[in-house]
Image (cartoon, rainbow, N blue to C red; front, side):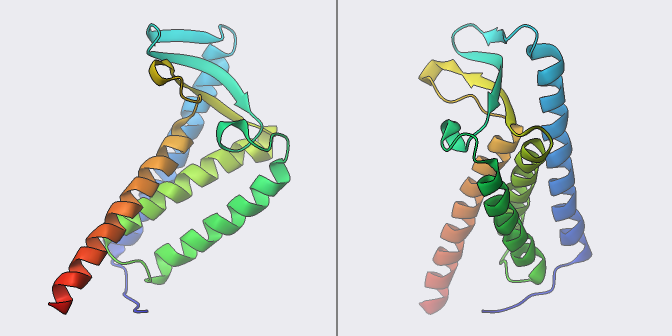
Length: 164
């Protein structure tokens, strides 16, 4: 396990990603409550993409509904672990750092909803494939997870090259 010092740029970049991600998530959820709740749904592309107000009291796809304290505890532990890993210098490379910052922002965005309201506001309704309704924080988590997988693949490729 090797440590590396983060540059000021990296600290600023990761903090900005987290802050902007949380702000965008909370703004879009506020807009959903303000404008979508009264009308329920608004088609962007009919039967493909709608904006639909929904309250998710569970985890992904509504699993374990009404167990918000479990989610708050697990989310807190996971977010703290990612923050430690990101800023301790253990994470390798900027791509992994960006991925972790996105995961952190998404986790905090949904945690804010669970703490304040007891549920998460969802509104992106991709009907073309009958997918679950989701929100900006969920998007940050999914994109962050994808980027983290890419970073790990790149690290494995680099390690193989070094061994040759």
